[in-house]
Image (cartoon, rainbow, N blue to C red; front, top):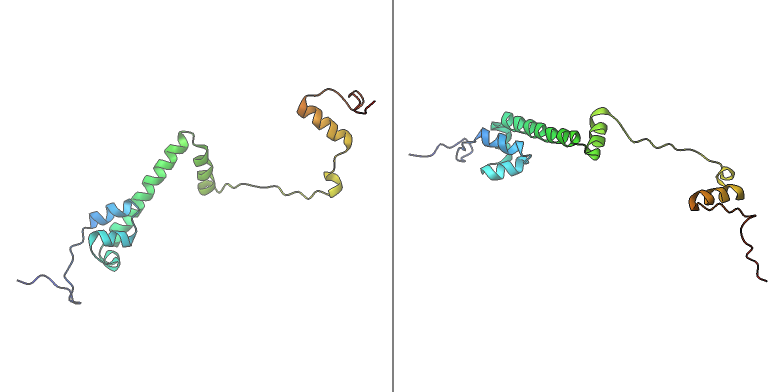
Amino acid sequence: MQDAVNKTGRPKIDLDSEQVRKLAALHCSVDEIADILGCGRDTIYRHAKDALDKGRAEGKMRLRTMQFKSAQQGSASMLIWLGKQMLGQKDQQEIVNIDEEEKRLSDDEVDEMLKKITGDTNTKENSPSTTSE
């Protein structure tokens, strides 16, 4: 008895839709699924499109669930990423035009900043002279 043959002369493949769904849920590409099941990608699209779509949706749902769990456990980077993706939040940079003159600090302002940084209470007037005798 001959095997069932389709119109193109190829042997008929018995495609397991459940296997397609499981592989798609693991985010396998259609090419990978076709290679694993021993058929062409067109066969997957023709005979198991619903299983492919369902598996992809399940995989996305599983990944999203893991992301939410990570965020709920306090992952700051996941909270930020989800906020940007799902809430439309974004980093904002304020660009301010500053005149070159405004950028320059006076000598007194520089001295004051140095005092704060170093904790030095000496002022220019009170600092020991650096001149040689």
